[in-house]
Length: 108
Image 1 (cartoon, helix red, strand yellow):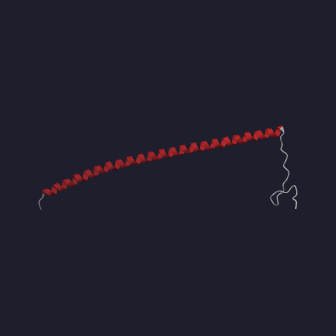
Image 2 (image 1 turned 90 degrees about the vertical axis):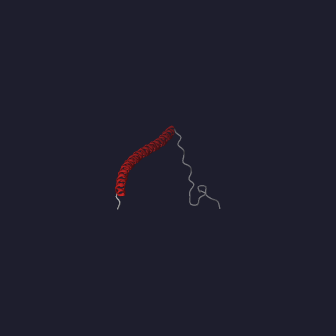
Image 3 (image 1 turned 135 degrees about the vertical axis):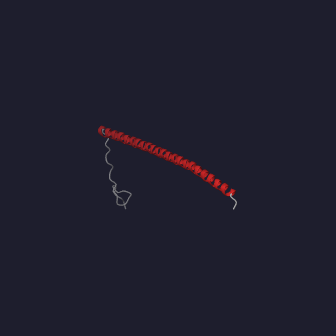
């Protein structure tokens, strides 16, 4: 059984003749213009991606800077609390030693 000339290798698909290619000066100019537009779009996409990456780096740097400032503040507060506790412990120790000495001197 022979297949018709317009039949494709795929069942149910027609093999239509190729469309004529437009090679006139206007068509060539349009293709060149479209190629330029495409390259400009690719350049713009690359530029936008680079700008977004730069913004992300800046945002991450600002966040790290804020976190570092917060940690420094926390450290300062902890050091202040430690100094206050040392003073409190020293005063308590002195008071207890004074009481111990006063009690030790009293025979019961």
